[in-house]
Image (cartoon, rainbow, N blue to C red; front, side, top):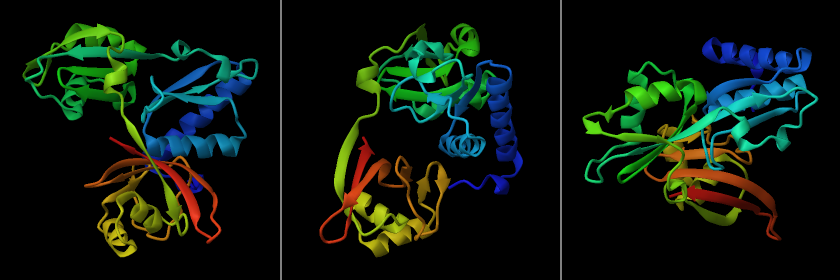
Length: 258
């Protein structure tokens, strides 16, 4: 759980931006959006809205499995759950290129940064053979369409919309089982099918991230909806801890991103 009083530097500034957005929605009855947030920043957002007792904030990233999402702060007279997806200033762009040219997420992100577009303006980037879908904020769309002709040395053709998104979006393989507890080492052992001792070794070697942050506390607790990245094994989401078995073990429902 994020301790707001312990934040410093850019994270403290971000918390202040969240509070300003809350005040704008509450006191001025205006909608406020804050650009794409990573998983750690989303945790700070959750802690900030909870501390302020603000319930009219929603996240949106362009598609259900999105990792990076923008935050919308809504005044009391609006129900954020009734707003259509296109209400949020997120635009999908499709880039097409030759299938023999191998491009990666890093290639596209580097090209966008080369256009002096800030990271906050860019959401998830999904890449497959000959095709990529980029989620960006509306204000940078004209610049990208006008200027992004090549990614590295590879020519690309851009158009609005998310072409073939169902084929390119992440596939999540369901994982169900039991763990001794919500301890990080127990969860990592379940996800990787390793022994508890080997899971602890991965954690101590700083190979495990939870919600984008390296975690080395083997006994730390994992909450529902946490996302884990385990180097060499992949990315996972913890959907739920769903009750206790007759033998006292905790049921876990998770997913493995393919």
